[in-house]
Length: 413
Image 1 (cartoon, rainbow, N blue to C red):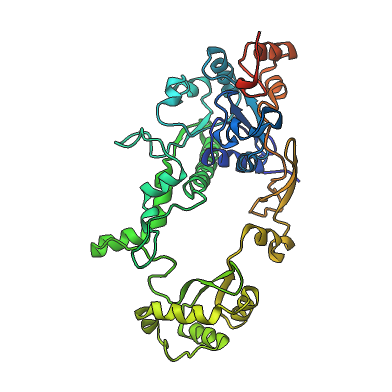
Image 2: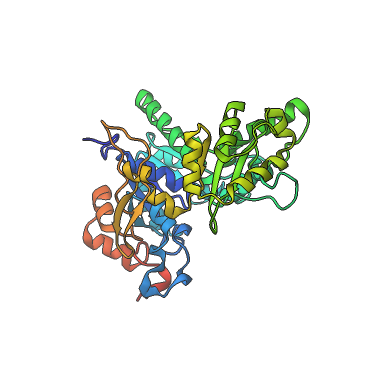
């Protein structure tokens, strides 16, 4: 079966980290020819540091995060600090459909790669720019990452314990990055559809902070209506109780559960042997939520988490285990759907990676191709896209415009 793009869309991905590369990864899953462009000195920082291991262990090829977010791409290198590197990239732009970048505002203009310049080279080019805070405004030049975007968007301000003690927390997996990346995919699909109608490309600007603000809509609407700043609630819900994470028997075993109705509460109480009359109504449960949590914790502490979840689900209660990564990978439901895919990649070998989420039978997504090694496809890509000979590619490597190992490791004559 054919993929959505079937190799007929070329994407130049010069972004780094997660948000921009996720856009490229998902387009690779849809069958686009995604070319990852890096420098042998300033390579994608998600590859990690050269100091993590000796050179012979190729440390920058061992980062799980890079190897996940860049699957399915072809990798080339170009020294964008050199006129020759910029000239080659402009030639690639001329024969490409999409350019993805997530540098700070002004970087692309300083490289001579601002939208006005690249659209003059290729009027059909769609360029997506993904700065953390936008290209204008008083904070536009601030550097940002997923966690700082979360903080600016108000997400971090809603974390913390419900009693007001303790610190605020960033989400450990940098929610700002994938949310921005997913918005970028949607925006690009719209722009590609528009290009089919008009024949022209366009510039998409996606401020990552603005893609995350809708996550705190509830608190913002509450402030507008009441003038009150929402307090941290921990795992608690503004209306329903119980609603939280509770410890079960064992060293570190937890379950999540929630009751939205009185019937669910009665079912939970009967399943755990708790007096359902003490907290019979929603208002009673919310009024004394500390006592409710204490009662639940006492009842759940001696119980096996897996058995407890099964018992509560059978009773019609919303419940799930709090799974560590190992349990997610071993989960019978996930395994039965063959979600994880085994990918063999040079240097690191074969490992399981998250698969494509959407199941599209007529144009299936493909998530089983590895991420590229640094400069792995230099000869292939430059020959296919620009018609370069092996001798021309070899000369570029000799003078340091391209390479397949970090510049710090190379000795040039």
